[in-house]
Image 1 (tube, one colour):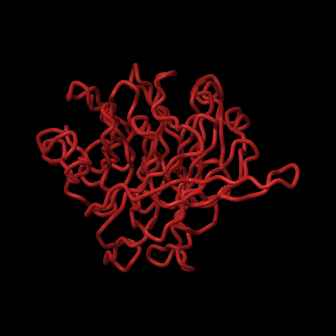
Image 2 (tube, rainbow, N blue to C red):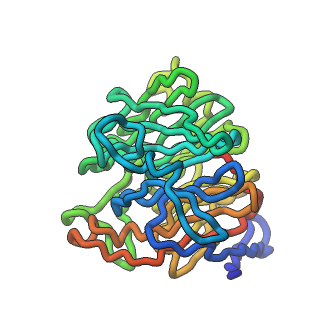
Length: 365
């Protein structure tokens, strides 16, 4: 178990506040890990990062044997022409308090409609499929991650706006009603969803595709323990935003009125995944510094809490209520073919880290 010491000055007075964060490499695997969720029993289920075109889109990890098997089974990881009951490409994956693992299928590798697939890990059966129709996605959509709000009965999806060569200008939030399946596309191209001109810089070099800086829109997304506030941000951007769930879900508010109710919550680095603890501290993956950072609820200051040379492109971060750890993947996205003249230079092994958050994490987001 390694330790990273977080030391900084309090906003008032001259006292020094010190926090020890324990972390370790939990698993060493052969393929790039995207986002991580958990079964009802606390076992890891994770997406293989779609940038690397994996055969198995989602797998379950057996901590005892240190092996993976297709999740939920082989059939759901096998594309075919007869139906769409399979996973095309998945990054976003979350679990809820009912033991259901929800997988956000972007549908970009196969000619299928993007969808959310829920698999019940208690009954080992399909729970439900929610489709994202053309009214919810656009040609440049890339539905990246989501919040599963079981209190209010909605999924809230972060659409990065970089699908099919998009430049992030169509980034948005997508709302899906759990009861009816109705979808709404909100805040497309707004000040809080589109990327800033702040390129991702890894080891001194900006991340580019075909000579152009990659700028990613709405990406990290989470909600507080009471589903009162939604927090979100573009990957390339210096601000974290939040909005009350009641406002976001109010269909009587116009886009202009909705925008007025969005708060600029704090500063932040360029970041991917996002999570939260019961005290409201936000955890975000800071890819540029091989780190997980925290935005402290008490003063909104930003600090790295885990930094490791093997944490290459920290991606998804999520809390496992079974053992009290936050889990985070090291996906090596920047070493993929898209950013290296068509040839991937990512190399196994890939790592899954885990660390103890400052307070208990919020497990079902």
